[in-house]
Image 1: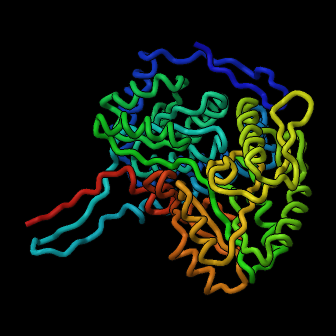
Image 2: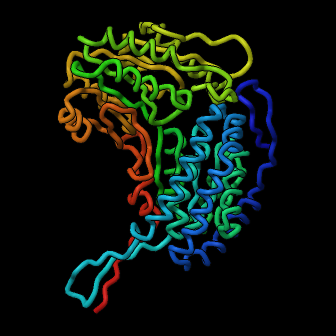
Image 3: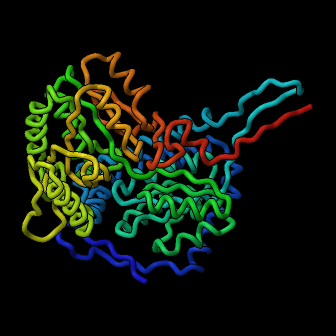
Length: 455
């Protein structure tokens, strides 16, 4: 079986890779387990040295990795370079903070001494998506390896070059050779890896159906999972918002990564007194985004990662229009080869329309009009998803209250687009998954939280 990467700019095959056989995948897991047995006994200082070097490798090779991401999934090269550097910040963050996050915690009891220890689990399987082909991996791998675990990666099948490059980063940084292994396997081979008794836990970032399948399999063999699934982030635009700033931020949040982000802004819930003005500003801001060849350094958003995904996206737009949505911008498939789709704005959306209810993975903005703040919150929370969300208002106390208390999501931001940051926990609720990555919460997901009491 061959695994191919295809350039979404022109639909041509970049390179084909031979998939591992089940026996080869099992051998890679066994090699990772052997590496783990030594790695778990290292100090945090010993782990931090190669982790810092991994950060340096990422920075030194950012241009190369940016081009690789552009070639395999269409990310603009400047954004790909920034992604590589962001991965480096995660390496630095956990190299600096892992020991503090996992230091023993005293727990006074009647015993002479009681404390909580945090011990590594072993080999962790990561099933990762293509949209942030480096960042998604490093936000699992940096804390996981610093905690003393080993990692095996089943990456999306359209970014095999990125998957192998990440393995090479860890090898070049001086980690034990087999501590992090890439498994070039198809989705149909994942169950066998989960069932492998040497695999102790699974983390997945991806679609809801993929998350359900992996969670069911892992549950059947009693292995912990962390799932970061889809999102349909709602941004509330209230009557007292700075509309110009809000429209600029919302367009940025919608166009980032060509709209192919779980936490990209997707639904713009606007109170009626300011809706018309906001729509005009949003259309102008979306139209101003520089669209084109991802190898052009001035490009802000490029093609959709695959042509079939572009076609699915267009189908969601057309079906919404057929059901009564109004098209304010875009919505037409460009002529020519490749998987391009233009910035698009839809309004007059209602429940039952794809652009209202479903995750829209592309540069398509959905505007939903509401009467007031209360209805805006109700519409935002009516979604099956709960990953990120935001609110735009000049009243910061009001914004903080809504973000902290009212929105049902894992991350809520005021007057800015939602972003992931190593210093903040990342994850969702409802059909956006469970568990957390990043910050001290993320590094504790895949450790044995052990109670120790001494009489």
